[in-house]
Image (tube, rainbow, N blue to C red; front, side, top):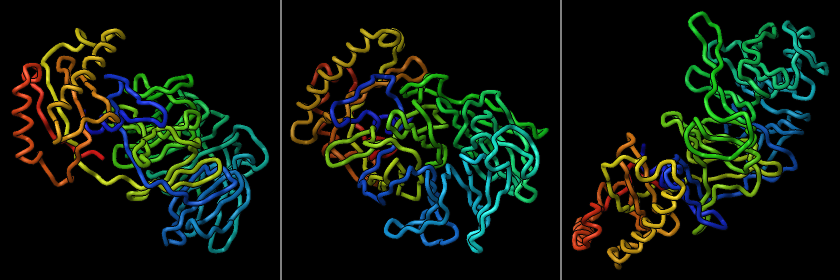
Length: 429
């Protein structure tokens, strides 16, 4: 497990320091320079770069409008509740009319709106063309990457994933039930589709016979807030999922006021955090509803605003590290008392390491000492400092490195523990 991703996650909240011992070995992403992108009286449900304008503007949907905005000027395109949309050709937008139980197609060039699928103003469950097919509170929509002439729609109150032919308007069913529970948001993960199910996330994949299969990925059947492995992580109430970067996805967990990070490779859930001045928080002041990642900028939509977050510049942190070839269960696992004792010991050793640092480095009081187990038998301990170097630096300056090694060697305890200095790898913020 990459040490740096986990280390960033043990951060100070506005009121207290968060320490979860080995269970906090989680990925995290940190942003800074939080700015207000725009005020709105609307709940922002979905955001995408505006393909039609192609000038960096954002197309947003809310409980009142479909709008295009650059943060300073906003134009209303449609006025009704739109939980989601997806853009097809440059001029076309496929829209979910949540309250009227149908899918609509909006031609921006002609400013023409028409019903594409379902029966507007009539809920139900049925397949067929416009006026015959039925939906019940649809929520999310994406273009089917396997066939661009089709849309995939979450039919929330029918607990189903539906398919819409954009040429004929025919509505059909991909999956109903089979683990779907009030499904809403959708995002592609390669050739699979990630679907949010209020408290959990599932993965829809297609077999060789084109039959779809839905399998549980992460989360539970009840509300909660727990980070860590996909097997144990919990969500309060998921509103949207969006891709952050390759292999990593963001989840707007509305009830916990947090943006959570899914690391598909490590199969763990972490946090998207925000640093302001000297404090860093992973809990937002407003509950997130939607996200849009564009380069180094993250846009976050809430009940009343859209925020613009800039990714922090990458730096390397000087860290003291110790490796132990020992069975982890014998030291920390399945024992709250042992974990508490480990925390106490590591904090005491942090004080000793500050004496070793002297004037050359400063032990961090924001990032707590921490540890992890690898392959069940290797216990690794970390003591981060608040001493940073540019990302281009591959190792601590030689003079400092040798001075710290000499001081560590002169300490009977540190020499016995085998503590040594490193720069965090890969680089962390």
